[in-house]
View 1 (cartoon, helix red, strand yellow):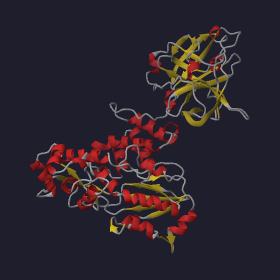
View 2 (cartoon, rainbow, N blue to C red):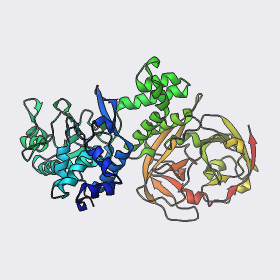
View 3 (tube, rainbow, N blue to C red):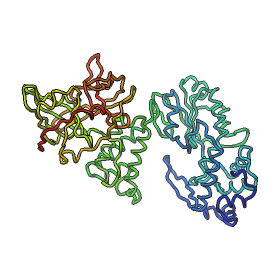
View 4 (tube, rainbow, N blue to C red):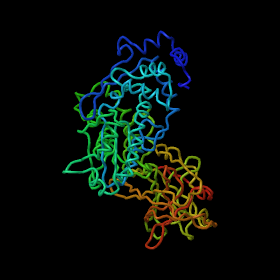
Length: 541
């Protein structure tokens, strides 16, 4: 579309601007007439200047950016400012590498001048007329280069780097590396340290091959970018490897110190120490925390959790993330939305009783809205034998709080072969503080990741251990249902507990424990909810 315009009058009409306003944007008396300056602190010290364009200029820049994106196809190595890609996908490129080399372009956006943008716009690839190209170059760039804060800067920076990216990808065959770029961060990784030592290391220091350095700093004989030598680094697999701040040794993750900071912050919140929590989060004393930081504390904390979640491949199987999510949900403001990845243990119920010979037995259960309290039928069958008329199950919450007793008759249990029971008519006061679980009644598929909880009883309460695995095979359907066999470690006492899929939905209940030479098994939820309901008498403690 842009290459169809012949004059600045055509461009002004397309952007919805008058010629007078377009002239003002192209030839301002002062840069700060069009931009609002804002200083933000850098991680490594100092400040970065953001230039926020005025609303009418920003609207014009956004239109230009949309048109330029139609002419730009990002290479696989580009992860910054590309839809569907992120710092996570950038780091995933280098997971499992023996050596990682990181380079940083100095003053990335400021080094892209209006002159370079003009050259891009009149190139054969875009083919704009000199007049239109000049106007656009002045609309999107300032005397200080591309403004950080303008909606047009990301796509233009990627288009400027296209030739460099192609050359660095081409050189990857010669030097045997994997290459990716996220804005001004260039990353090279080696599956074998041999090629790193051969091409990138000399005299005890990082030494870049001339071809590679020229591709960055002197592309085709034209000065392009300058490397920030102070930020260049290399790291080996036996140490922590970071790509754009993301740990990527064996999988993408946050730094250990970030996790500890979040855990400490949430713990302080859980005990009511809000000032201590903010001090821990910001790394400041209470007196140093600004009013703006106080206002942004809760959204920023939630954002940190969301960021952690975004880096985890299977967040619903990550015990550390789930523990943070549980702490957050227990201490968040009432009007704040829950963090979806949290420990399901708070939804698990503990069942115990004694059989006809006064031997104790135990199991787990859970409540599903619309169904009732679900557990394994063999758990409650232990409470009654054929020569007894009734049995009793005592039910506790995950924190050892007594909830209720369930008394039922023998004839409700003995005739059914499917190992599931739904205790109906659950009193509302019993489950009012029990978090709801999300059911999935589809039949699980082979290879699907699953998790389940094992409980540990002590005087201080119940604690839970997360077990993970995958579905190995499905049994043949019969009157007992379709048993699912898994390598997940099901221990004695887990019977009746929920089995979760990779996104935290309940897909079944634990049927049998894992024994030597045998697989553990669970009954799909779809077969559980088809079971005969068990009605009995509820007694609230």
